[in-house]
Length: 476
Ligand SMILES: [Ca+2]
Ligand SMILES: [Ca+2]
Image (cartoon, rainbow, N blue to C red; front, side, top):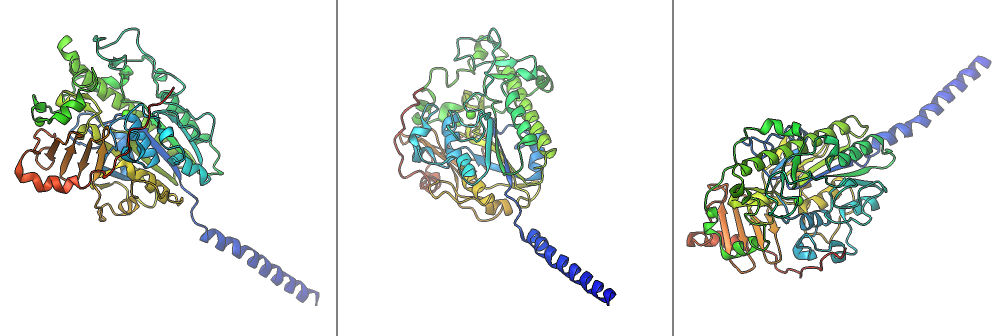
């Protein structure tokens, strides 16, 4: 009898244990995957003359290509505005300059948008830990981040160091930033070093009890075009980018007027060549070296992520705030509506969503980032934004997508980029039109030719219908 009783008790115990553990097992299987972490890499003034976007470019970006291999590369991504503050404000709030009034580098974006949440604030509200370092906003983010160590201003805690004298030998042009060459001696002394070290530490050490939104703002290749010696070595013999002499002859008055609105702004850095022949080639070497350094830093971030517990569930986004002219149209700067100043690298790697090594050739501007990241992470959408989510393109890059890229520089000046065309209209009503199927360098302005009238009308309809006034400048 005792044996039978014991056997019954064993069966009961086994049944009890089986029943007890089943719900746990089922619960684990049914639990949705935890919210993904986000590594948000912002680069400053990186243009498209890089091997990531142009296989013929002599400027190699192996680490960005490594990132592209794990996700999706966007080959026709454009900034919202080709200047740091309006670009970053628009991308990080989802609101274009024509909606916010933030048209210039000095515009006070928080005064313009006192209640509108930044993308970091949306993530914080949803329970993420938001951290960041380096140049993410152009001006103070005011509470966008979670921890006190996040860098809170344009330049991080370590200020840009300058050599005792300008290296390019032309002190009369612009500020100390209109300079290029080998500087500083040690990589540890660059402005970006502490930024990337902060982010590596955050990837390694931030507790995993909450999902992480980590923003890393790399300041290079922004001027001054300084990089340590080791990043210059590969570019001693670099060829010059394609340029057309007198390219500006067919520019309309609106373009000339926009380009001349600062003393050293148009032709300023190009003019160094007249004072010191060979300077332009030195500039190209230095810009390439700054990109090599930027690419190296991206690689360090990817290495740190891959060694962290977050490696399998982190969405990585890499973008540049706008492009940069490196001599085309006699321009070494941004602040324009042409392709070179507006075309940007954009890569999104979303585990389980983006096919590895995929590419999307559809045109878009960076207003897509805010709604896309919210949707990818399952956060509530923000109704009052100008952009649309591209999650469907992340799954299938050939899915229908009707919107062109829209760019604004200064109130009343806009460009529309479709798959084939770039149409520009300035506030005085003058226009440019370029056919990228035949003219990838935008050398021939077709706007005056009657046969393209229908193309112009088709593009004009995408211009903003209303444009708010420019908000006041920042009061420091
Ligand atoms: Ca910039
Ligand atoms: Ca031309």
